[in-house]
Image 1 (cartoon, rainbow over the protein chains, first blue to last red):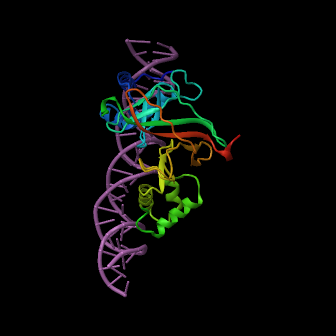
Image 2: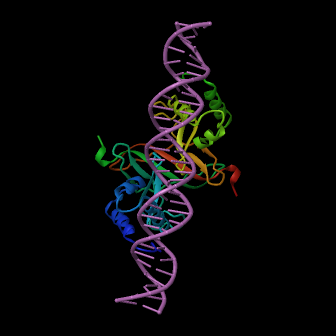
Image 3: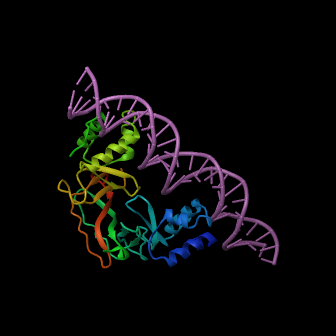
Length: 127
Length: 127
DNA sequence: TTCTTAATGCAACATGGTTGCATTAATAAT
DNA sequence: ATTATTAATGCAACCATGTTGCATTAAGAA
């Protein structure tokens, strides 16, 4: 249920996510590994890691996709539950927030899921 | 405090938002008005309308920006308050939800605002 | 009617993301 | 250990959304 082949490039990405605990944007990753692997390889590996449940993704308010550890595939999530994400307006760091998402029901709508992005200051950037 | 000049193109956009009550993506608007006005004009007018508080914007989970009526400028919002947005997974229609956003506080973080996107089925697309 | 300048059109650009295809390299089979 | 299979990669070309500089146009004030 993991990744089919443990290639050098896959290991590089997995190692990085192992060391870093925050979310990483694709742009960051592409630039971090420029020289080490191709842009399309980064995209394709991230897709696979998300499909296999090792990573999940969300969008920042800049429209850029970010990835973080944990499974968020619908109806399979035992490794992580739906949670909001945080984005620091000052330094741009991003992370998962340890909160449950409570979806209130709304008349005339069927709500299946929700995406929540909290904006503000991280621990380092406060005051 | 409105728009400086009421040009034909501005009127076209305002008229449309007057008739439609849902949110509209820039891509839709550019395509709707192709032949009537230039792509960059659409972008620039939407910017101005948002700055002046007539419209507000949010991102769908496709990363596309959408605009809807109402003021959401920080510290000036009397015309609208922060609210979640809805996006129909079936037909793609999008709208504002009449709910207050309650931001829970999180240790080590200063939360200034939050973006909430609810995904599911709209009235027309249910069952 | 004239003047000022905000707003537009256009073309060229920037960036994020995708795709087809030949080549490479994990891993299974021998 | 060697070979065969095919998933994965690199590359280049592409697409879409969004931005910008600049010459031209047209609101609306004078």
